[in-house]
Image (cartoon, rainbow, N blue to C red):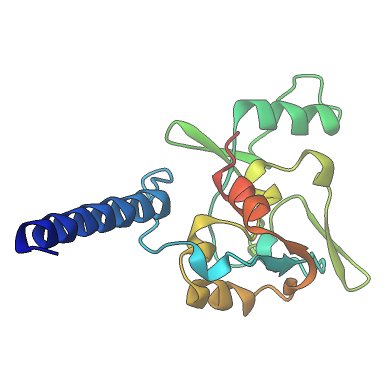
Length: 176
């Protein structure tokens, strides 16, 4: 191989590598409502396990937000039999332009029911998307370490049914 052909070959390999690197970068970095995945998702490419143990840990604790769209609020209100198709301030609060379910003073979601050592959602069939997609949230999937940190509070993580990569990503990216 003469030096000209060697140089062209090396340029072609470098160009191909840069395109491949860009493609990998593009696939692994996504905007998620002002949160960027800084790491690729390869650490869970073989899938993860999760099964709700009804511990209630994801529905209690430090104050926070359980976001609900107007449509989700309407579905919850209808499920509860409210004629006005809306929730009162005991169950819903306005946060800027958005709505969040409320908490009791102990940190429990107002819809969390604790009975016989189990915790159950009293609106399970119409719970907001944020609740339906736990634990496959972007913040829990950033790294294996962030998954394990969440696992310390959720005994259902790393147990139960296997979710493959596509199932996980579908839940992570799901929007109301």
